[in-house]
Image (cartoon, rainbow, N blue to C red):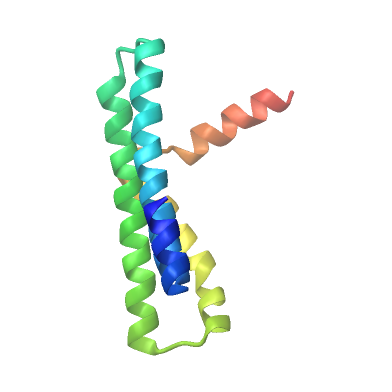
Amino acid sequence: IVSLVIGVYYKSIEILMYGYLVTCIISYFINYYVSRKVYRSEATYRELIYTLKVVLSMTLVIVGFYSLDTWLSLKFMYNLLYLPLFLIGYLYLLRILHVVNLKKDLNIIRTLKR
């Protein structure tokens, strides 16, 4: 609510977006905590580590995308051309950090379709 009021007062979409980001992060951890109380899992810390690895990967990709944009001063449409490259980089980082195994995951999806 605070970021909403401040964002509307200053007429700034950036404040609204940062407020939304912070709200999503806080909501994630609240939901994670409550769901762990309801559903007791032995892999709680492992799940949290996977989440932190995903956040780290996405942060690195965003910093790389932003750095490339400021270094090359590309226009918006050129940035759209680089999105597939950064998506591949994101998936590769997830693979390096042992969060996903694309071959195994695709095989699981194929067996579910049958």
